[in-house]
Picture 1 (tube, rainbow, N blue to C red):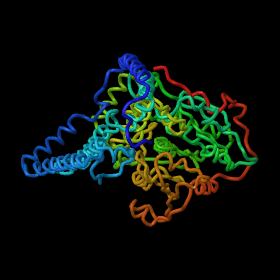
Picture 2 (cartoon, helix red, strand yellow):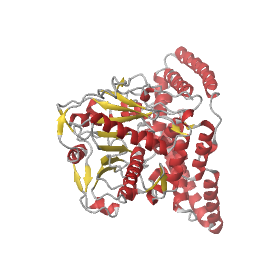
Picture 3 (cartoon, one colour):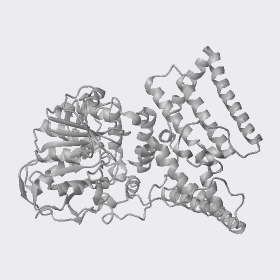
Length: 597
């Protein structure tokens, strides 16, 4: 990378031609944006009352203690003026240099020009001064409840991240250098990328994270051999072909979350949890959920439990001839597996021998970062949106989770795609991340209201499939894995839920890393370790403090736990049976469907 911007492109004719193409693409962009759905402010941003209260509290303090406000403003103005004088002094030496820069290290500002070029350095240092001033102003507001403060700080941070100089062409040296080097070609390609993404999302902007042409389901992702052996309106049940001569008698049934596709567990052979389980000698079934359209508007949690979870368990039992299965639930599917097992317990049904939970929240008294989206302003907006549409569009879920990590999942890829003119990378994890699903209207509201807002599952007051259930109703052996830096299902929240289950046989593991990398962590990589503790599950921090750290993946530990609950070894089973013929090769049809809505 160069350290000084070129003064002018060599080929002005090519630059002019590219700028003309920009004009043409701009017209196409306007047409694409005209497709945008009618905006719903309640789904786009927090209610106005949140910031109105914060502003009121801020000015109340300012009136009561005006000296404090003047001191804050004077400090910012003083630092800004000193910075300007320092910059002028550096230029007065006759050298094109920036003043001393003791600002924070931030990978967004990796280009050397942010330190050496007076203009870019001035912009960067001023940005960080403004951020610090905003943070200090928020910290000095006393009249805010803790949850309200958390929300104000989160959305204020979103605004500060959005206004970073790296996000604008005129103040991004990487993008300007690339434009000069390519005689404007990078800007044309970037605008083409932008227009394509807006057209693909019918006027909305959802930044594409991976090359959509680089992966084909069943070929280089979701390619472990198997077949769909059962299908209903809620799901396809995939059975995977045995790779060992003998298998454990008790089958394993995995329930992935239906807010994403199941193949996060089968991206490629080297990190496929599905392949790993099959290779250890298990008959494995995995549910692939239907991607709902408007006809699923009235499908709720009852239908997911009865027609999804219980139906899959029953069909796996019929195919294998076994009376029990070992069940696994990931994220929201772990929450729903909890409800399923509680319902079965109330019915006296012992079909599930053991349950495994990956990154599962069942007590929402402290849901972590996601809590900023669980107030009435957002959920009222979602309820209104799904009442109109009949489903919650995957666009809303994808955008919400992306903005929890906006610099990594929104702004950095936007800069790369639109300002640098680069093609999205051929990255399987990001490809999966962009392959979202819709949610049925009724289910989305029930889950958000009953479980997230009202915490009915943890309180033991929720009614599912005609049964009043709670965490204490789950009494089978369980193995739970939470992830240390998980921003979607924080490990302490998972811990607090699992602690309340009625099971006497509990194993809790904390894996290093986050919501995906902490789970998709194959032993061959030796990348992330994990913590275990045989002590009683008391207070979360105390449990972790006395836990034992183990290098490497938790997968072998879980497999060792699972095999003691999986029965004798028997000859490997064929796919399906006479009453369950092969309907389609894995990964099936549902995973590739794009609903007509």
